[in-house]
Length: 295
Image (cartoon, rainbow, N blue to C red):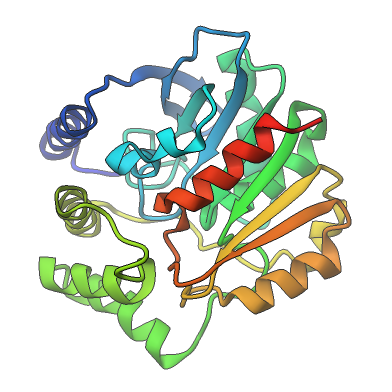
């Protein structure tokens, strides 16, 4: 982990405890050894192997637990074994080793995570950076994946270089204050009032982002447009995008997905939803319904 260990681990542990209190649940915890070092995984219902299994890979500068703000994963409306993987190299309790982003090493790592957790096959979902992880995994070990859900993924086009997007993304990095992080979240991640968190969860997210930007030494390479490499993906893939995503405008993501992913089974557009689509209830509804009816 690339945090100041002494100062940061207690903070993160307390942050998780507060999330558990807000959600009225306690997450199962796994610490496994992979080629990228120790990898931390959160979960619930993981002992019930009769259930469908969903493995989640989060976006950059986030923790996988963000998916369950306000008990958001309850909106799947389908009881599943859920594993939330803390990607090595991102600000979380996993160690900070990170491979060359254009290699298939993250896919090899994801396959190792499955092996260590004794998951034979599962549905996988990735938001932003996590979407790229899903695609790498599908190229390396497609037989372990039933279907993929990409949420505003960071692999279908280059990061938007519009002034507006760059401004709001750089603002909290240059000056990581509550005010600047809040502005970034309002303009790029959410789309109020349609897409927003409770006030408690929003405050927790702001605290986490300020902490991560201030304390974390980010060495992770940024996601990139995988272009024709995506043609190597043969696994059933579903694309979920929001019309208010500044980072990766949805029209281009859909166009490139149709162009390169021959196994694309559907694309779902959510109006007035920002980049943080993994916190949107109807997106979770869509994933849960698709898995429930999957054949």
